[in-house]
Amino acid sequence: MEELLAYYPGRGFPAVSVTGGRCALGCDHCRGERLRGMVSFDGTSLDAHAGEGMMVSGGCDERGRLDLSPALPTIASLSGEGKRVAVHAVLPSDEECRSLAESGVEAICLDLHADPSVIRGVMHLDANEEDYERSLRAALSSGAKAFPHVTVGLSEKDWRRSLDMAARCGAEDLAILGLMSTAGTPLEGREADEEEMVSAFRHAIGLGLRPSLGCMRPRSFRLLEKRLLELGVGRMAAPARSTLRAAEEMGMRVRQEALCCCLDPIIPGGRT
Image (cartoon, rainbow, N blue to C red; front, side):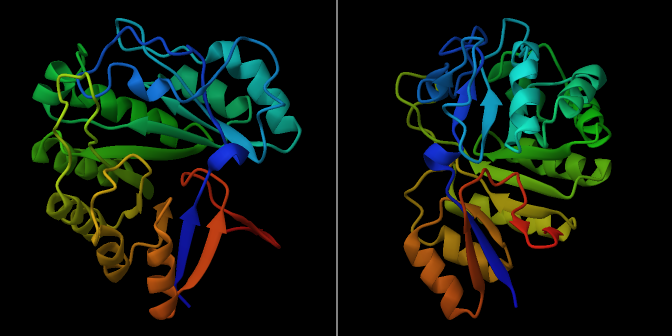
């Protein structure tokens, strides 16, 4: 029987920022706004916030680097208690990926970009496609699960070449996100298009990838989730209840998890 994994992280799997609300990079689509709803890590224990586990992330410095090392002891402690920890890293090096995996990080999420106009013009990074590929390969060889994120809505060249990169490097699972309009940013009023989202999923599936519908996406798409079910997409973050009913009507088994969609659910006898 086909299955829909529906992820609802909620308070049981909080997002934590190691930089609080600070991000010096100031990407045009975010400007640090996405950090405001996260739990701030102040160097002390996060046990009180961890249910099943947590997603650890943060803002970048002016060079586009995110230093997650201050959180490694806490990550190791949580992992030792059986908590499941994922991180959202930014252009991590081989050494950084190995350190994250050794501390007990189960999944390393990382954004992929491949269009120079997006990397430099939107992200303000002095980087290129090869830098993103190097980080992806580092995550894939780290011992943790590598879980790329590809964003639709910045440019077709960007998402298409990023998906090609993921397939070329041997990634299997990944999330496809949709650009959201964020007030007060240079890209306010601009968001992903539903048809382009479907095209991206088709392209990913054609490459042999297993794409998930990520949590960061416009919620105005009335039919997107059901269209993705018809394409065979079996993993979604925070799908509508009507999507769960549609999946059941299609004969799919529906499983709900209080986790990030980068993590596989635990079942008796092992993980899926």
